[in-house]
Amino acid sequence: MSDEECNKQFASDYLLLDPEKFGIFELYHILFSSDLENRDFIKRHPEAKDCQKQNDKHRWIMFASLVAQKLLLCTAVPMAGVGSGIEYWLNLLRVNSSFFGLIKNFVQGKVVYPNKESASFISFTGSMDRRVELDQSIRPGDCRYYGALAVMAAKASYENKAYLEKTVKDHWNMDLLGSFDFYNHFQRKATTQAFMCRGKCADEELIVVAFRGTETFDADAWSSDIDLSWYELREGKGKVHGKVHGGFMKALGLQKRQGWPLKHQKDEKKPLAYYVIRDMLRELLQANENAKFIITGHSLGGALAILFPAILAFHEDDLLLKRLKGIYTFGQPRVGDQQFGDYMEGLLKSYKIQYLRYVYCNDIVPRLPYDDKSFLFKHFGKCLYFNSFYKGRVVAEEPNKNYFSPVYMIPQTLNAIWELIRGFYYTYSKGPNYKEPGILQVLRFIGLAIPGLPAHMLKDYVNACLSASSELYTQLDNHQTNGLSLNQD
Image (cartoon, rainbow, N blue to C red):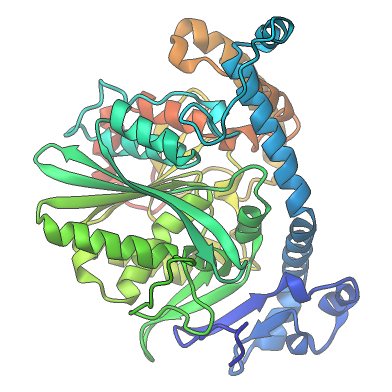
């Protein structure tokens, strides 16, 4: 086995795409070649019986994934540069009060320059919603508490360590346990981020694990999202648990040469997300029998959050699974097929783990990858769907599950117009908590053409969690994921 290969004994089948080995001369082969499985940019299990049939069926899917990943590889540096510039400009305007404040300070020689490592510096994502306080009306013991805490943690995960230390300690009255940059063996750099904090929740200690999602100008994170490689997870040499998104597995800590070994040799220079977090949790939980933990994340972070217990189960980590209180994801993409979803629902039920998948209105990301005969991906668990008035209902699947439907084009555009108006209207009708920064208003304008883009921002998810009624959460126990939905009054 070469250094570039992964030990795939954990998988009964797989299909892997390698954009680094995909060039302009391969464009013809991926669409028309009769021996696609022999090309360097694609690898399939040697015993796969339906290899050629499945390749024919998925050619255009693989083509789109490889081309998009290749473009991201080529544009990663300029994307990061543009993002860094925009982020710095937004912070420059903020610390000088406004554009006119910046001009005034420039004339007076008093310009304040932001420090990217300071607690006051916020990310592009954070610029969309600057709230840091936990809602004081939602306290531990309230059925809405975990969701409200989780969405704020998911939002904070985009920020630097100094910001996290100040926010967690001064605003949340909790302890920051660590802020991490994790290594991705397949991208050969640290591209996965997360943080952990700890605090009191009623009579028990609560640990929060929050995975960072896809940053707007992070080509590596986008590559993980659109890497439509997959692995078919199996238990030992026996039961198969379904197909899982390859890009997310790699971001979580899948290793080259070793795959998912139970025991991992620590490498301080190349820490892997799953193993570092697992070992920290085990140490913390063993030290306090009353401690529990929850996992959260937005976008890509949500995908990592729900895959974390899947690997715990693969390793038969009974201790952590029994102490896992809940998983709360926001704008999470699909992570596996129907078989994997059925397996996960059974796993979560057996350990009494609450899994809530929040979806806001026309957010495009939860509707990707496609749920059809070609893509195979399926959502599972209970979905809390919120419309643009922040009214929630429990559903098995969000409306317009694949987004790109002609039937929904006009309603999506009309809704985008309302969201643009709502940003101004709610500021006066509901208070300053609903005020939208200028950069989000600009994004709302862009949303008139691409309605699903601004709907993915965390501002709407925070608003949805704060607006949700207690009745919505109490209805969860009565809901069966069979298409039935319960409206929030």
